[in-house]
Amino acid sequence: MDYVEPAAAREMPGLRLALTTGVPGPWGEAAKAIFLVKKLEFVPVRQTAMEDNADLVEWTGFRNAPQAIYESEPARIRWEEILALAERLAPTPPLIPTDEGERALMMGMSHALCSEDGLGWNRRLQLLAPMLSAPDAAENPALAGTRVLGHSYGWSAEATECANARVVSILEFFSAQLAKQRDAGREYLVGDALSAVDLYWAAFCALLRPLPHEQCPMPEFLRAGYGATTPEIDSVLDPALVAHRDKIYERHVGLPLDF
Ligand SMILES: N[C@@H](CCC(=O)N[C@@H](CS)C(=O)NCC(=O)O)C(=O)O
Image (cartoon, protein in one colour):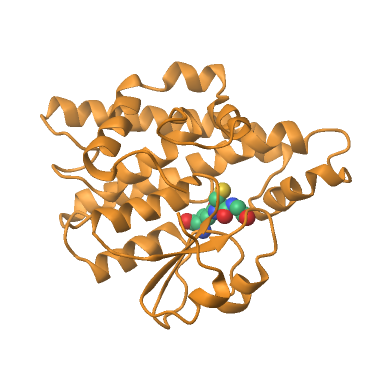
């Protein structure tokens, strides 16, 4: 992916998407997948994980990624803001169901994956735990970037203690929902068509079962961390959900990922 520096992207018209370079961050990959499905072209903008990203902050007011910026509108930084922007710019194909019940379920399930205290949030707490619970975590210079992540995303030993149960509970719900859909002869997580939650699931499944190197050339240490799940998570992670991820990538997004 050819990233444009924030200072240059700021002068460009249209849709720009700030993404963490070199890693398949699930929030960023989901935003890319949404734009791709809707055939929305965007300029990829450089964000560097754990750093100040001063040019980006000066432009949009925010340090992390993803951030979607359309023309001179305020930056959209949260998953539901980015999804709403995509729906407005390209209503077809719709990724939010029109039926109110399906819409509520779809948004609620997406919230369980992407929002604070969701699956992504709690997996990140677990990923950071070995480093941030080390005896020298507060002062080791090699952990400076990790401390930025911990501070940005609510890491504490107490929060981490609750993470496993939350991830397990979300996975059980997703597994039951997929089974219900399958029994009703439906191929997607909600309703009878692709919706945003299928794309979020595909992206966030990386934090449990990362794709192989040929499909997702990420640094090996990160693949090992993403894939280091607990026995409780392993016992509830439904193979049908992993197969659903593969189907979504194959049918709607395409591989290998490019970041
Ligand atoms: N703002 C997003 C979440 C974004 C997020 O968590 N971004 C992380 C992905 S790991 C990030 O940018 N990390 C690198 C950094 O903070 O520099 C949302 O609430 O939907």
